[in-house]
Length: 170
Image: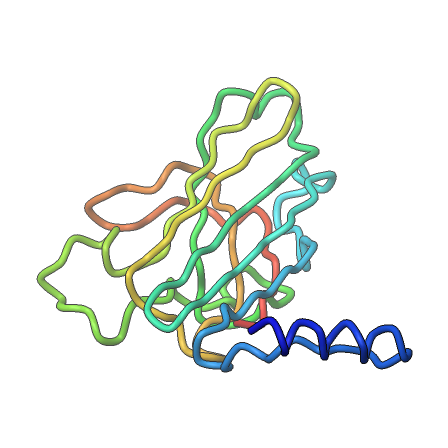
């Protein structure tokens, strides 16, 4: 170990660039960060800005939402936020249905089969939320995150109209 450290110091002094050993790709988290929204469907939310961060490991998927610019009348309200299967489009329905874990048992409650990020808006017009699920969303299996008009109904997963959509290249 001491010899390796001395050799590294000698190489560095000679102007060599030392590159640390790479972590195997299977052990590194897969991270995506997207700013949005891509489409606004309800003009009351035209000033909302989103930042979606997705981090996948071998066995988990975490999705974080940071949003700002909600109108004053949204303060204190909770909005359903879900991962959807398709990228955003000019119409809210273009994003398709909620993404569901294809390997999950259909006997599980909806909230364990989907990724829900319901957000409550603060007085300053911001909202932050996140969800980590014990399964990995496969590449290109999901395409967007939508902020809906209502809180998520835990029985049906419904959350009303689609207010804004951010395309996320899962």
